[in-house]
Amino acid sequence: MDAPTLSVSAEKNPGDPFDIRVDIVHPTPADVFPAATMVRRLAQHGEAIRGIHGHLEGVPINEEINALRFIIGMVKEQNASLRGSIKTMEAIDTITRRQDKRARTELKRQLTLVQESQRQDQENFRKLQEFVTSQLGRHSQMHCFRIYGTEGVVSLSQWVEKMESFFHISGCVVENQEIFKKKLTDKYCPKGEIKKLEIELWNLKVKGNDVG
Image (cartoon, rainbow, N blue to C red; front, top):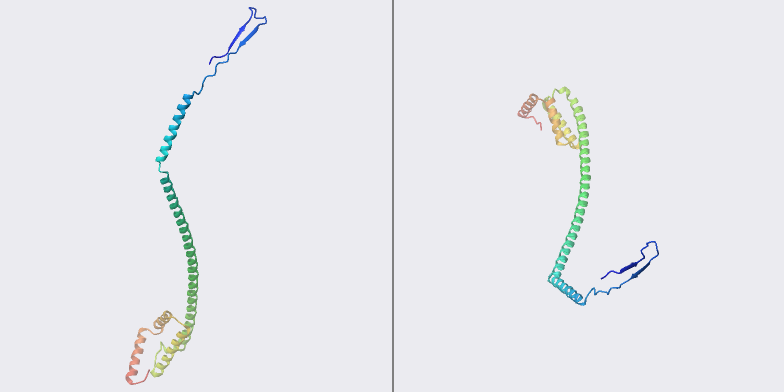
């Protein structure tokens, strides 16, 4: 497209006024989008659209959607299972805490019973010790329970029965009885004295005396 022209005329003297004439030429509008070009481009666009449509038809959209739905279903099931596991673990933890609390309570109760039993045993032991000491004082002149005739045997038998009765009434455990037995034997009835008692008892039986 031709540009407009501007014609200027003036006298030789540049200081004089001059006239300016402008001729504007309007170019003929050109055909920017000819009909043939439009038809060709429309055909190209249509062909491209058909190609895209054909490609999309070849893609297994339904299969992909079904696969995605299956995966989503599996994820939901896993989430539900996980929530169930969490609830189960919370329930187990609650039960464990309850059982632990009960176990500690029972342990404290058993410990209290043991301590009370030990205290009672110590008290019984003290009473038994006092009783034995008082009883032994009565026989201190017998020099290790020397027995003379049936009278001494009967007296000793009665003393033993009294001791056994005291053991039973006081609830003295077997362990404490064994401790006292050893102490009595070691202190008041050495092996030599026991042997003498056995010999004397045998002699009494041989003579026909009833020492039962």
